[in-house]
Image 1 (cartoon, rainbow, N blue to C red):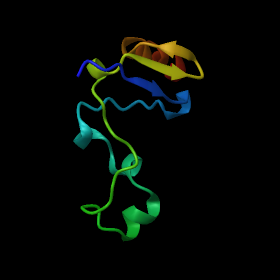
Image 2: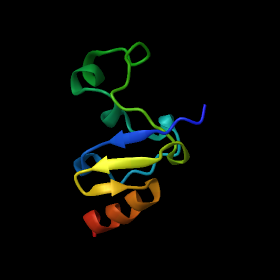
Image 3: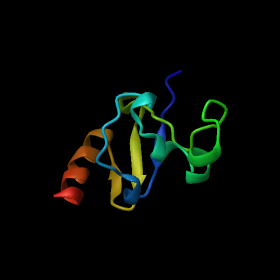
Image 4: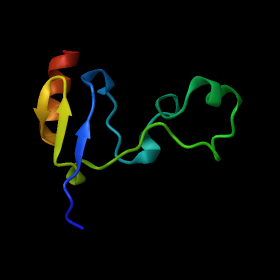
Length: 80
C-alpha cells in the first residue's frame, strides 16, 4: 500500500528489550496485572503491538523526531 507510518511515543516507553516479533514481547508488557493474575490470555487483546522497524517511517518522541535506526542510539544514551 506504500503508506507512511508514524509512531508517537514517550521515551519512557523505550525498554531494553529487543523483540523480533510479537511473541518476543514479555507478557508483563502486553497485559494489565489484573488480566495476568485472573484472565484467560487467549481471549484478551494485548496492550502493545510489535511493528517491524522497516514499516515505520518516523517516531515522534519527547526526545525529538527519530528514525527507527536512531532509537537504538537513544537507548544507548538512556541506559548507559
